[in-house]
Each structure stands twice: as C-alpha cells, then as structure tokens.
Length: 116
Length: 113
Image (cartoon, rainbow over all chains, first blue to last red; front, side, top):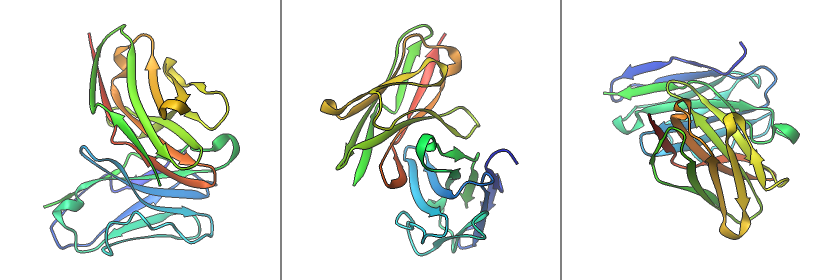
C-alpha cells in the first residue's frame, strides 16, 4: 500500500490476555518506530528498528512488551498478560532517514487497545 | 537526554486570529526540531522541521516556526486561523545521529467560529 498500515484498528481484550499488533511500513523504509499515545501523555516512544541494527528497546515499559521486525519489513508488537494501564493507541511509523528525509516519520492510523 | 515541553494542552482561538503554540526544548547537543499535526481520526503528519539550516521554517497550510537558541524555543505560528486548523499539534526533538524522536504531550487547537 501507499502508507503505513496497522492492524487491528481496534482491539478489546480482557486483563491477562496476550495481544499482537501488526505494522506494515512503507515499502523501502528502513526505519520503523512504535509509539504509544495515551490521553494527556503525548506520544511515548517504545521501540525503534533501523535496518539490520539491534533495535533500540529503551522505551519498552516492562518485560511484558516485546517487538520484532521480520525481514526488515513487517513488525509485530506483542503485549503479554495485558493490564488495564496498557489501554492506549499504539502508533507505528516508518521513515527513510537521512538528508532531506530527516525527521519525517510516516505514521499509521494506530491500533486502539482497550483492556477490560 | 532530550525533551520538549508544550505549554498549554488546550488552546482556543477565533477564526482569523493569530495562532501561537508554544514549544521549548532541552537538548545537550544542537537539536533537530519538528512539529507534527494530527487531524481528527487521522494519523500524524509532518507540518515542518528545523534541521540547522534557516532558523525560520515554513510548513504546510501557512504555518511557520522560528528556532530561537537563546530561548530554547520553537514556537508554531499562523497569522490567521482557519476552521480546518482544528487538530492536535505535537512538538518533537531529535539530533544528528539520533533517529529517535521525542515528542511533547501535545496541544489541542480549537477554532471558534
């Protein structure tokens, strides 16, 4: 597709269940980001992938959160044993960093997670 | 470490009035600064950016921002607000060699008819 695609767009789950959120970045973009958007909290950085380098996981809030990026393209964010405080919109972005493209992240429309 | 502070989580202006959204940054090295906009039910998109060239940068839809090192600020302005400007605006910072953008908490702009 032309843009960043995320699925599911909405997910309601019960506390304690595992969830997987998927991101399909723009073709050719080497960098992929996950952010979390909570009401009044802005955008919280979670994890960043760049090419074949080790990902920057410094923003993952706990060991219940993990992410992988297969073949340098699609990424999956997994939240294990979900808690109510995990409820948020999870945003994925991709970019082709460098030169004129510096700082231009292309965002998907997000996956809204509600934990009951 | 780098961070941005956006003053005012909600700003309301009348249609045709000046829009001023404030952003102050903290960075131990020369920063790159960005404004992103999120329209209702849409993803974020880049509005404008400063990456160490001209200090006054122009973006889409008539917005502009000025990098002021002495004030550590990067405020967003538009001379005349339009109803279509109603959205949430995010300031963000990174720097050369660091591709991780740190975002502020956002400012929701409401336009009064």
